[in-house]
Amino acid sequence: MTHASRQPQPPGFPVTAARPGRDTPRLPASGCATARPAAGTAVRAAAAMTASTTIRKRLTVPGGRHDQAHAARLFTTAALPAHHPCAATAALLVSELVTNSMLHSDSRLPGGTITITVTGSPGSARVEVRDAGGASVPAVTDTSDALAEGGRGLRLVSDLAARWGYRREPDGLLTWFEVRAEPPPS
Image (tube, rainbow, N blue to C red):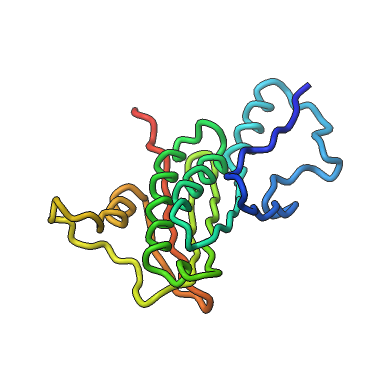
């Protein structure tokens, strides 16, 4: 008998609940499989179901606290399944985006928030960071000054993500990236 366990969440931060049918895998109307396929078919059916399974989790944190990058890393790692091939890269890059939100957006002001959304499938992950926006937009800067203390975060995102971008929204700025697993060597 197996027991479902709740994935660890950063302490003290609300996580929006999964919405049945939208954030959780769909089951047949009965709630379980009723027929047993022939040998071999079951393996192919399970692989096809796993390949299309998508997770989506969201965390909102206060924007004015400097420990939020750490909370975002923990959350992103916990949101993806164990041993997900993109977890380490996604955790690194989300900390860069959250740090930018804390430093450059109006979310750093009292009452401001930052929302992290993680969507994943077996070979990829998409992470979105939504903040209150600010006077500037994300831009990769020249990092030729080896002694500069900042300016490398978006360079990391640009170099390690398969795709990334941002869009202004009525209530702020949404910055996102997608990472994909490396194809197996041939």
